[in-house]
Each structure stands twice: as C-alpha cells, then as structure tokens.
Amino acid sequence: MGTTVMDRRAYPAGLKQWNWRAPDGWLHRRVDWPQPHGVAPRGSLLFAAGRGDFVEKYLEALGDWHARGWSVSSFDWRGQGRSKGSNAAGHFDSFDVLVEDLGHLIDDWTASTPAPHVVVAHSMGGHMLLRLLIARRPQIEAAVLVAPMIVVNSGAFPEWAAAGLAAAATMTGFGRWPIWGVQLSRAPAGSVRQRILTGCADRYEDELYWWDREPDASPAPPSFGWLNAAYHSARAFTAEALAKVDLPVLVLGADQDQLVSPAAIRRVAGLLPNGELAMFDDCAHEILRERDHVRAEALARIDAFLDARVR
Image (tube, rainbow, N blue to C red; front, top):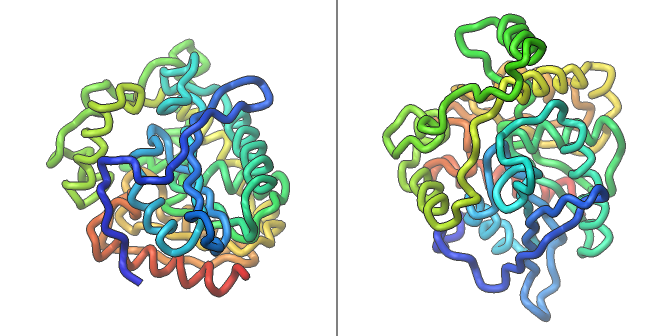
C-alpha cells in the first residue's frame, strides 16, 4: 500500500488535542485521532517521537497509519513542544523521568483505546521505549523502533571519549551548557542539519513552517548533561537485559545515520529474542520523513510486520 497524500501543514479533521497529566502533575500535550464513528479500527497505535520533535512534525506518518485503519495517538515529550512546562532548555540529568512518563502514558492509553495496541517510537523515543520494555512489560502486542537512539553517534570521536567529555563537563558545572548554538537548530533547507535529518527538503521545510506557526515547537539544543544522561542510560542495553524482552520488535535503521549509531542498532536487534531488523542505505536519520520511495518502503515494512505479528 502506498503512502497517504495529505496536507502536512494542517491539522486533519478528527484530530483531538488535549493535556495528559503525569503522576507528578506535569502536563503533556497529547493527540488522539480515532477512526470515524461507525468504523471498526484495526487497533490502536501510539507514536513516540524523538528529542526536539513535536506532534505536528509527524502528522503525515500519523495520517498513513490512520488510513490503514489504526486509531492513532501521539504526544510531546516533557520539555518539548507544548509539553515544555518549566523545562525548555533541552536539559535532563537522567532519562528515568521520561521512561516513567512513557510507562504511565501507555498504561492510560491502553486502558482507554481499542485493542490490539502497538507502539512506534523514533530516535530518543525508541531509546525510552526499549528502556521501558526492559524495566517491565507494558500491555502492548508489538513495538517498532525507527532509527532508535541506542547510543548517540559520536562521529570521529571514539564513543568512550565522547561519553567521557560529557561526564567531565557535567561534573565540572557545565552540564546545562548547550552542545551547539540555537542558530544550528534553526538551519534552513540545504544545510548540514537538513542532510543529517532527511534527504527531502520539502519535508524538512515543514518543520520550519511549524516552528513559525507554533513558537513552542522550536527545540532548544541538548545540553552536555543531556548527553551524559544518554550515555549513562544506554548502559541498560546489555545482552542479559535485552534477552528478557520477548515482545515482537521491528527495528528500522539507516546505515548512513549521523545522529545515532547504526552499529548499536544492529547489535541490539540481534540480541532481541523476537526482533526483526531492516536497514536502509539511502536515507538519513528521519526515515519516516524521507523522500517518498524511502517512506513507502519503511511504511510497507512496518505494515507487513504488524500484519504478521498483531492479531
């Protein structure tokens, strides 16, 4: 099945926006897009985006799954989009609170939406979902990790050196310092940032459009403390821990990914007892926001996995 043609710069009819409250009181913007009245849904699909992302950035992907019969939901992470609250600086000392947010949100979502339930998570979202699957078994039937941030890609630096730098900056009082400037985060189409994220300039410009329309959507750069937390959190992905994740998991990765480690993605997928791996060699990090032929192939791979694994 091909991808759905929709206006990526407008809210679709039937999309409901509201605030979901975490147990500690933090308000998260959540959206639900049920199937039309009288239409029996295929099930319910929750999408968890990456660091610095926001719901509007993935409206097209939500539309693809909605057209396939799923009732879809998504949300903005604590500190991002319309869930920024008092933390708009891109800083976390630990990812534990984000894992807890996701667990509580999934519990509420599965209790109030039609079964079967699946979660698709991109980048940082994939990291948090995998952490949750290791910690406990949420009431979902399958998971899809899209370019999951198992480990941050350290580029020319050895991973141990990048992790050491982040730890040293944090310990010496520079944990809240941004890794890069705000200007880099707002780079135009054709920039290095675009090439790192997606080969599709039109979809890249969709993000810039929403930044102008929704000021809260514009992300803050990550801090050295955030990077330190990411490396520390990745220690959870041991062979012993992953061997206990018996849920069907599809892992999609990009061989040329410059933000997350393709080698780590391959390693984790190979250690999941019920895991499947599909690697793409013609795309950047944002597989679901790539050029049409890449998106179509990725969505078809997800469809086939869910059709085979979720009844």
